[in-house]
Length: 277
Image (cartoon, rainbow, N blue to C red; front, side, top):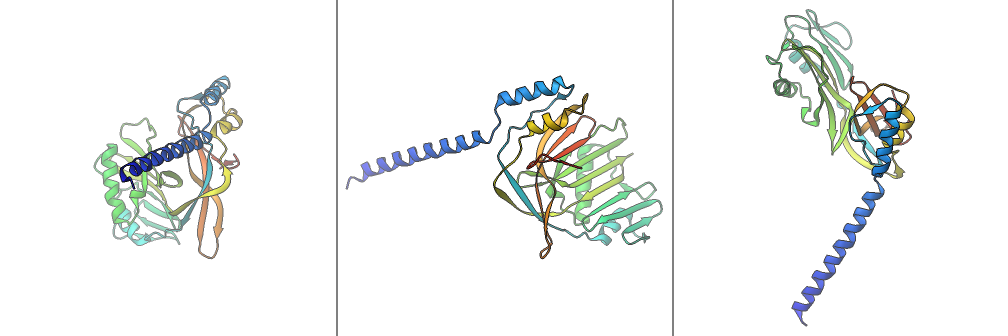
């Protein structure tokens, strides 16, 4: 047998196969994308309705996915120790106080903290990077999975001595909108903190179900908000879709998020286009 010739033939066969597979993949990707002309027309329609879209409009129109997650109970005493310090008192089923500072657990997986007294949590910085680094240390002390969040955006508070940092959950390349952290810092102290987290464990595709392209939602749902400036459009998981009662496992589907320059967010179920309040 001529092994040299056989080797050349095999190389040619695999090269052709790779080209065919690459073409099929590219064709599939194109099928799941809205045309640029449609995106351009959407921008014109929005402008005619008095709405300025300052960001790219996503073209995705592919499959819907489901996020599976579980409740992640908080260590309430450890969180209270870090945020309130020793000597706090429990003034209700889920409320802890010390002087004028208060910690309220809004659920098994979320809490809100307000600090207005001398014992507010000091961060000793008003830079965004400094606050981020300081809270990373605090999160570790409270057993909070800070590495499963990423910085979302920084609202402009219009005040030099005040900063507001917002983080959203992040899992396998997708935003998890219902997982969030909001940190308010005034005069280098944490005066407000909101936290919510449920542990993502899996993402699966919904068979034969595609999302509604966001350009359709912009045209049919957002044109009534004349005079707004849209600064961000993206996709992530949000919204209750079901519960497995035996395992307490929860499910969420994909949603479109539309945010204006004033920080107001609009959420829409990506499967049926219904607004999520």
